[in-house]
Amino acid sequence: MSKTRKLLNSLSRTTNPTTRAQVRTTLTLSNPTKSSFGYTTDSLQPPYQHSIETTSLQPSYHHSLSFQSSRIRAGRRYVLADSEIGEVVGSAGSTKGTEESWKEWAGEMLSDEQGREELERSWRNVLRDLEGVKTSGIQVPDIPFHSLSHHLTSSSLGAIKNAGVVVIRDVIQDWEAINWARDILTALEETAGRPLYWHPSLLTARAHPSLLSALSQISLALLSSETNYILSEPIQTTLHSSPSLLPPSSNPYIVNPSLSPISSLQLHLTLSPSSPISSHTITPSIHAATYASLRPLFKPIQSKISLYDPTLYLSPSNWTLIPSSSLPHISTEVSLPHLQTTSIPTLHPGDVIVRHAGLPVLGEGEQVFLPITPLRDTEANKEFIKKQRQAFERGLPPPHARVGLAVQEQEGSVGMIRSSGGRRVMGYEL
Image 1 (cartoon, one colour):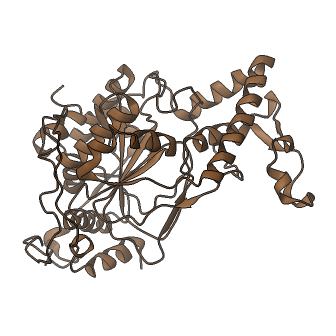
Image 2: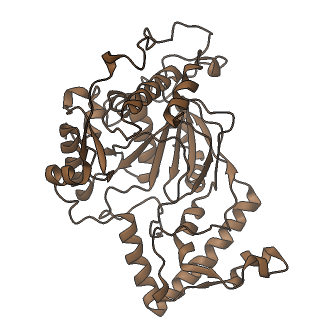
Image 3: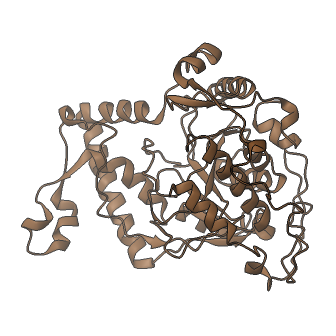
């Protein structure tokens, strides 16, 4: 049985998605503010409140068509994504991605004595900071969507910045998120699991006013700029992710504007319930992102097995900077032994987890997530989003997707995006 079919079967057993939050009470925002998407934050409170047990919130349809029905099995066309994308949107231009940028930065730092001294100093500092995290026992912040604006203008913001991760609860209604997952998984069965980027449910999810409100608020708080665009990505069935190697800086949330389509933030909208065996862990400290970027440049002097006391393996004195000629290949995964992880709270349909892209996540079990990557208004991102929009209008994968044999999807149009905010983040209505 395929992974897609297993997930569909698990969703079919989700009979009453409203039960999770039936005991929650109604809260009201005291200071509504207007976002750049044209919605006031108080009007974007979940209209459902989850306060009573009811079936009235169930959708009026139940996907009664058989998965084998000819009415939903239209023929699929496949294209070689690289050649088709290149023909339609051209090359990626002169922008640099994280891999190229990190290698360039690392090479420069390793090549002269001053740079090497700075790397060694940064390494000692980050190891000290991580020890402090172990002592304090930082947890993953967990806040409700209806009070997000309060938490982002109070002392809580400092805790969120330091943790580098936050869970925002109930951004989308449970049943709505589950139905998106069901629709997308059903379509994926027809494509043998090949990713989809422009399915109607994906477009609806990315354009949802509540999601865009949460995205706008968190971007303004952490990036000092509201999100102007978002990257179009397919669903994924785990949060497990290696860290993005971003060159360390005084402000870890600000990315070099020449990098595109790159963001220091990564959001995931949860679309399905957690399975009994699902678990995700993370190191809730922004220092872990700095550590992950520095770690490939350092190696242990003695192995763990050769030391009588295993704690000596982690001692700063046991780690040395690599020579400039030994710059590792970016795709080579390295261990992160100094990181101490903690469990991410259970994620339910409609919840959003926000994390710094440099924080690694370990995950087990299968759960459906929709990645949402915010892009700032830079010249490089503006050029990229034009090409992404062109790919949408041709039904092709976006330019950052190199997927080989890809699904030729329905040709897109601005009318398929239901909200003005959704059209804006796709590069329309500039």
